[in-house]
Image 1 (tube, rainbow, N blue to C red):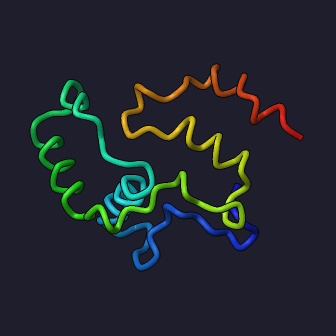
Image 2: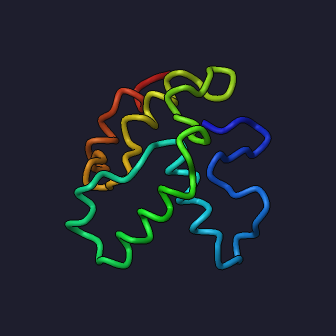
Length: 110
């Protein structure tokens, strides 16, 4: 799904993997492309994590969002984009199971 230049939209550009802030930057990228966390995450996260999510959501204003659904075919093949949109939800409980994914039409495509 990634272009041949080892491009990864979630890999932070100006931070090393070993940096303490690396994971935060990855989550910020996911938020920017796939939208906010649904309110129901309060059911599974403690208060501190919920506060962190709210802060994160305020760190990226709406005009800085880059919805993945608008990625062009020049950047990602249409079939790949549709597959990613089916699986990427900020609440993992909304994502398909591995078994469901293995039955996805994307794996049967040539």
